[in-house]
Image (cartoon, protein in one colour):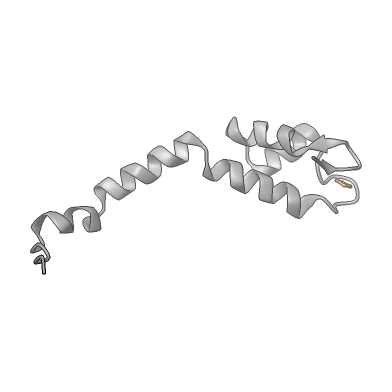
Length: 84
Ligand code: FES
């Protein structure tokens, strides 16, 4: 799907750059998205946000923070729920 009509930039191009670790500003400089009329900016930002959230580095950081959180370890010392 074309996100930026002015520059003929697709969501796939934006997603590929976002998965490579680029932020919106860097993608904007690289591709020129949202640099003419600006109508595509919110859609382009949404694509970047969706792809950045699914980026493996973000998933690893999230998993690490879950493992290190107090909530993760609280179930070990908490009493088990009695079966009815
Ligand atoms: S549609 Fe992207 S700058 Fe115009």
